[in-house]
Amino acid sequence: MDKEEILKEARKTIIDADKGKAEETAKRAIAEGMDPLEVINKGFRAGITEVGDLFGRGELFLPELILSAEAMKGAADILTAALPKDAEKRRGRVVIGTAQGDIHDIGKSMVVSFLQANGLEVYDLGRDVEMQKFIDKAQEVSADIIGMSALLTTTMSGQKALIQELKKAGLREKYKVMVGGAPATQRWADRIGADAYGIDAADAAKKAMELLGEG
Ligand code: B1M
Image (cartoon, rainbow, N blue to C red; front, side):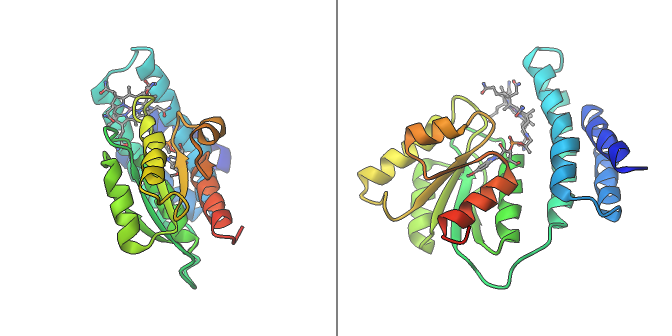
């Protein structure tokens, strides 16, 4: 199988919601020496985006979406585990999670893996995380960056609320705030006064390094 075929197969395994095949394809891509990020973005992510569009148009139902998401997660876990690690020194601390009311965590978990691969110490709060928990954890571990992921237009307001709460508590200058997730944009990040926006996991890691002065 050549590279293009692997990418096509990756996309198809998500549309078919075939977790076993998705994981097998992820392993094959690694064995072929392909770039994990390219395989995720051009293969698996293309598949889940297509599935999401079908779901959005009412042509696919929630149970099918859940199965596709499980296949996507299985493949993404394998690929992110294969990222080259740069752990020679701890470059900074990041507290991250998905906004309250939001259970999407595949993308956030990928961001976590990319941050860790860049030598950052990451405190992953998980998904559906109450806003105050981000601040409490950041205080507890003396974080440098707080990152909030949101996949729903209804939960991205949590990113704005976090910044407002930091200001209210007199902590805004203490932490850099990074936002991301499918509905977020650079424009949104600017509007709410975030310090950075990551379009994908690699960009998030790059922006985090820049925030830490290591860009
Ligand atoms: Co949901 N869902 N979902 N879903 N889901 C979307 C987001 C949706 C756009 C689908 C659609 O209708 N077309 C839609 C939202 C519509 C809107 O808000 N306007 C939607 C909906 C409606 C829902 C439910 C409400 C459905 C229902 O119950 N009726 C429900 C919500 C439940 C809740 O959260 N309260 C729901 C549930 C689910 C599943 C559980 C089935 C599953 C999630 C499983 C899981 O995460 N464990 C799921 C999935 C899989 C999706 C889609 C299809 C794919 C999301 C994904 O994993 N993408 C999604 C459609 C889409 O996004 N096109 C959809 C792959 C991932 C690698 O990309 O998450 O974008 P992404 O992450 C990227 C970047 O965004 C960035 O880097 C990541 C890696 O490259 N990034 C960051 C992410 N976070 C970042 C943080 C950063 C920086 C970068 O800094 C901190």
